[in-house]
Length: 501
Image (cartoon, rainbow, N blue to C red; front, side):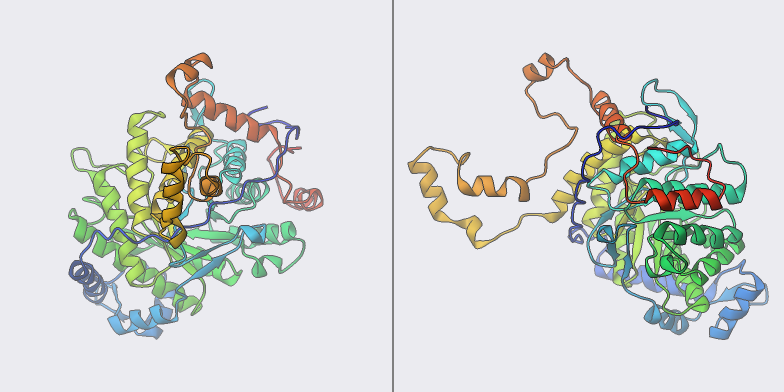
């Protein structure tokens, strides 16, 4: 059974190991001089233009740290104060999974691929129809993500539009994420009032009060700023509540060049760095040294219409530059990539996703977010697209690994044996040894000959993706959340997701 209802665990298989995160950073779109000029300009923006919108209690905290209030109420952030906050902030963050062995470390510890966003539509794999996203769709997306080896973490990719109460939405989103995947996850909150109950739910899932604080497997994704250069009052409150309850926080700056940030890529990047740094200072004012990750998403406008274009070449190079800037400042970070304006799994979706994720990964982004499972400018979610993108990300991560040169790989005897013996390397011991470690193979991509493909009925990539999603969903609940813990959660919280066996 594909969508909703009771699913029977018919064929549950051991989970696939997650691909290790390779070290990126070979691609640096900014020269050292340009990089430093952008960072200096960001500090100047904070000192001379500053931030607006901070609620009074947070403005008071910031002023205690040395922020200056201008006559018009804007808060000016002196560079020495910002640099001091940066010095207190962790340069790496350990993000555990629900199963601790699936945890990841963010901060120059390799390139990690993950979901994100807030899609309001789901693409039906069987019919090609678009409809409102549901709670069951969220479980399906996260369940599929759990079985994708090239995806390291999962932020809530869609909004369950069939849950209308705000607290119920946050609780059910948290439950669906947790029940479906043992990888690190993330959740957005509709209000600060939801944070406490959600953390209580996480405690029950882990087996007792206070357990989540010791194993914070789910991030609080907080939009702390509304570009240009305004704090989000609700975001400030959610951040404070999340920090108080021990959640790792991911802040978010997402200015759109030509709309909510300057039209030049350089100007947009500088404003974005300033907004990220404002988030660092805000977190420091609440609890110095608290683990935070900072999402810097320099979105782009199609200036012919004003609409966002996440799949453009400008978006690709801007996100790569954002990763370079964050790495220079030693800020654990995420950037956006993999966005496409296409509405189907067509060539446009492939090339827009491919070059945006590839550039961000090769630039060494700690987390590449919004990168998988989405269509239509991140308004549409699709589990079929998710498994297709998993193949793409496997190839990209392999390209980031690069060419590994070892003495044994340059062995003259192997060449001599081949040319004087069989005339090829196909059966050589080294070929067999490196078959898995040196090479990556797609789960869905077809490498058969044309004749063999036709003989099998010429299956499309979409049909293979549908089959893979069906296989995962038919396997049922993954098993990391015990039946007892799930029962305890359902008895205490208003869980609306149907039971899945």
